[in-house]
Image 1 (cartoon, helix red, strand yellow):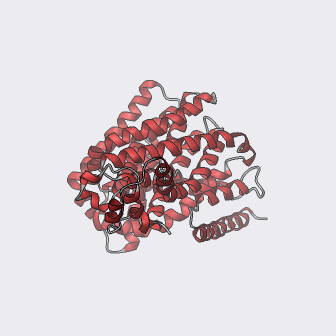
Image 2 (image 1 turned 120 degrees about the vertical axis):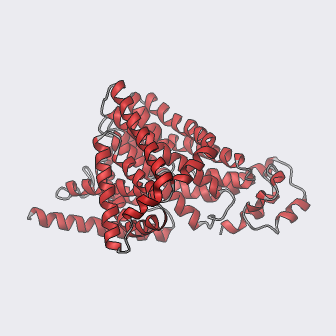
Image 3 (image 1 turned 90 degrees about the horizontal axis):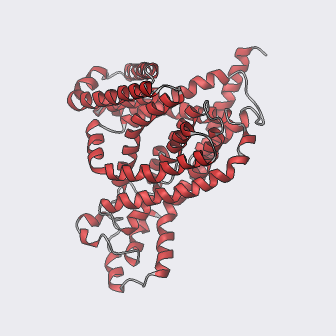
Length: 430
């Protein structure tokens, strides 16, 4: 068979399979990421039906997928929102890093993978999945909940931290010296600072220069600018993903909204290709030996993410039920964990299988944790603690606003898990 013909057949089969798997995931009500990873395992080396002709094309598509993921993530935030969240949420960000990055680093060292792999695995276990969490919040009807801004604040801190973490990891993986790594980090920090300054002071001018009433022109300009900046960032060892993220931050207003609407389908396509490509480069036979470590790590970091959410929500004055919901919602890992593992497999190939198993577990467990953490906590603690007064329960039943009343009644922020929280959650389940 001619090589071009084989490429078209394989590529068509991959995209069609992704569409079918996405529909299956939608019908079942969970993220499509684990199915994409499983498809990659099935089509990769050692899988059921290895692909050859389309592998190079899929690799390029995967690079574009990472760039578009980060670009659209940047479009979600304005520079002022990032700065505001950094000022108010940085203690929660520090707790998040300590509780969730340390288990990954410790696991890599225990497994004997070395310090560079420890830095990479720390990132895998640290960063929650913005995509999965956004979908879960929408599916559960919690976008208006009192705790939702807290969840988004933690995610923003994590996303902003990636602008520092990814260049540092890239420098370590490239084997740069301390001086070279420090220079790369300084370039990254300087770039982030310059982009935030320009976006804050001159964001309207940048958006006006990119803006166009013609959707085709807007698409070409934004996509071309993003890929160009990502390439330059890669050349400077800053990471293409960070470059794309910064382009997204620099755009605001109607331009950001229009670009988001135009690029979202492309992001979904190439992000799916990225997850498949990661699976293609993971030998299915390498997963069973790391399944137990991945499961242990998943259970530990599920608990630490719940602790992170509890702390962040408590700082914001959210009541007990909302704290549990915050922690459960943050459990999911996904796209960032795979991006980080994809960067690190060249140095430590065993990270790939472990990260695949880890993400498969948590991308399935995450939506379940978001739904059931608070009811289970209420049930378990309710058996230990004495029942709340009936009057408190009755007064709470007239407030179905899902934790929103705390803003008017901060003194009720510490009632303990009891009957008042039962009605708090009724609109979010079922």
